[in-house]
Image (cartoon, rainbow, N blue to C red):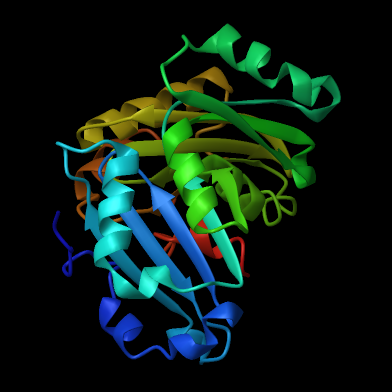
Length: 272
């Protein structure tokens, strides 16, 4: 495992100076991805500029997700404190949205496995996104959830998509045109489309290069019959090395907008 100090969201030096005698007033957020784990500490007792401290650890490909977390937490002293709130976010493509009116919690697995094949050791979770009246269903590793529940009994579990919809659904209702938001993660991009605050689409796709993101974006744009002259495409999240992406998109779309400082907006959506 490698602690990535060069990661733009990594400022672990701030964690080293944190007073953990007050940890029960802090919020710990854990983002689990295929590439690694982001541990974000929110300290409301300090200035807004220093409220968030992030610590990223790359995944050891020889270990399972649960095995990785056990090793990281065992080796990282400050993660063994008690925290006032603990949020766990899963970033993967095994997620879907359905209207809240059609959802019954005892049917979560039935709905989910109509769209996805079953996987060993998987459990289906769900979150309600009230500002759009939808439910996000997502798969997570059962051993990972059990371990984190034992380690942090107050942990709450979410899909990363839930956090993004929670954030963007509150701010996309004032425009009189359609918007497509593409949130870029390490190897997954999340696409969300809105029309005057009404969610039109939510989807996640894997990518290996910038042209893949452009393809997914333009395919969604076309499927929703969005207007090239009036509607907007917003790019958020991991913005490093996106010149190629912009070069492709700006050939076809007039309004391509970069949203700065949104790498960790999924984590921050639960504390802002």
